[in-house]
Amino acid sequence: TAADNTKANAADGGTNAKTPLDQWNDQEAIAVTAGIRRAVLEDKSLSTSAHNIKIVTNGNVVTLRGPVESADEKKRIESLAVKSAMGKQVRNEISIAR
Image 1 (spheres, rainbow, N blue to C red):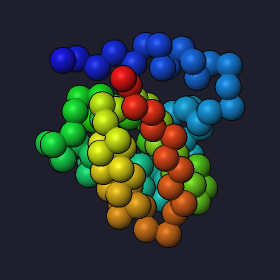
Image 2 (image 1 turned 135 degrees about the vertical axis):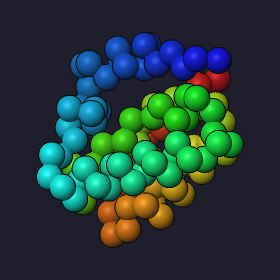
Image 3 (image 1 turned 120 degrees about the vertical axis):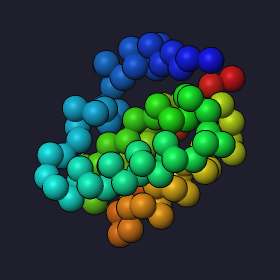
Image 4 (image 1 turned 90 degrees about the horizontal axis):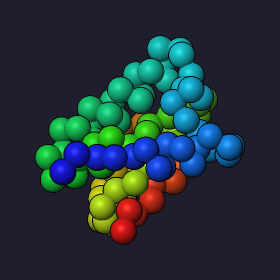
């Protein structure tokens, strides 16, 4: 099933939530975000929705956002992010879409 995050993305418009526009543009931040994205995409046990979460690295903080299908996916993504973003604080703002 194709992921449809339209409603979740629209909700970001009027909040202080981190969005991809908040991504820092330095080499370290880009490398951290890319490393997490790669780890998430390589995990074939995750749903399409999970593969499409937002990953935003801003300074020492990595924010994970978006809907996933289960609490297990939410925990799995956080685990992958913590492992890939050594020394960074990971904020798990992932929601369960059910």
